[in-house]
Image 1 (cartoon, helix red, strand yellow):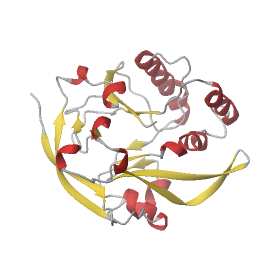
Image 2: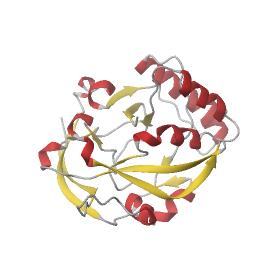
Image 3: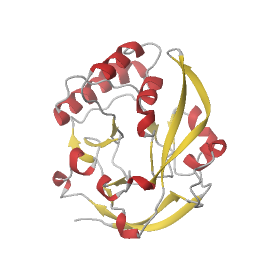
Image 4: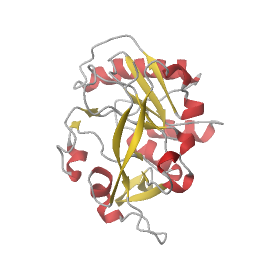
Length: 250
């Protein structure tokens, strides 16, 4: 049985006049409640109809993998076993010839249990309270290269060459629960329901040197510029460890 819900979505509050989010408050905006525009939205449960959703049409889809218990605190196991399983999954889902799995995050803390500037230093994190994309489209390559570890995985130069020489590449995110989900489920938006004007760049208040050039991380926030019916939100109720959500970031 479907379990549609009404939920509060914490959009970025647009002050108007063409203003963008303040980069000096990037953490408070992205991980906190600064400049908040709360809207009660209908969230559709895709349980039972998940097969009709796809990456190419909606920007997300549901897949299954073998039910395996990995020690997600063990970096070697994560990179040698879990990453390999995810790479195989993405190849099956997309037909990709090359897949580079480059980072992971654990979200096991309750919502609002961390202060905004505590997110970056925690192995286990809380859910992100704001609808967002991890980076702006123009920042996609720099974001990927910045997340490649200095050791224990593919070299940044190799990934940069792969991006430069392939006719098509994309960035996908994976959401996989470690146990049945009973709180804070992931909510995803149908990409067709979001106009480009509702994405807002949020530069972080720092830069870094990367492969001999300056890199600035630009996040992408979501605002609600029109009627409530224009954004179509979805989730998968009672998500199980063998179920995986794949969604597009770029």
